[in-house]
Length: 169
Image (cartoon, rainbow, N blue to C red; front, side):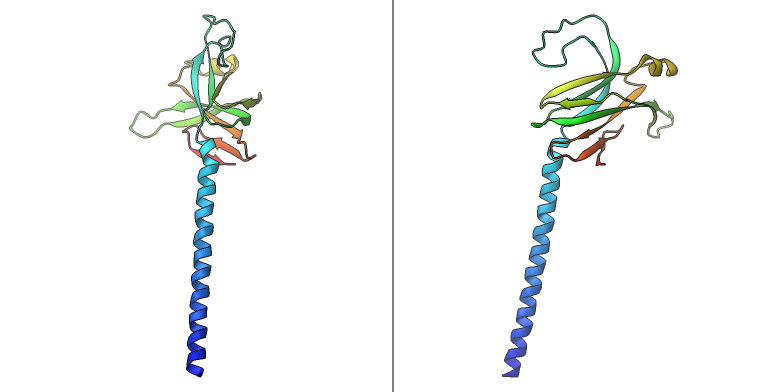
């Protein structure tokens, strides 16, 4: 009879270990799924350096007249189905070593102006101040890149760096 009781305890302990391992695997799977869902929105928020018409339509269907004035700055696009908030743009001057090594970005300006919200499917531009672009000579998409910091609809703060890598803040 002792033999049966001891065997039963071992079986019960093994079953508990299996349940614990199953719960651990389920928790990991849920965390991965939550991370993927959380990043689903943020993966659709992008930023780049571009030339644009500051009087032109930044909103689809906008009645603004398009002028022939062009300026350089950041474009931030929210291609997700949810708004993003409190967007701050960072400008970097590109340094290409021209020796087959990757370029690096030198921070030259962090915008003090905040874009409060970008609705789903919308684009907003932000001008690089002349005093900044004038310090470095050429001003084009070969000489500058941008990064953007923003808050997603879940209240999580994110940073998309000058090479477009996304990381939580």
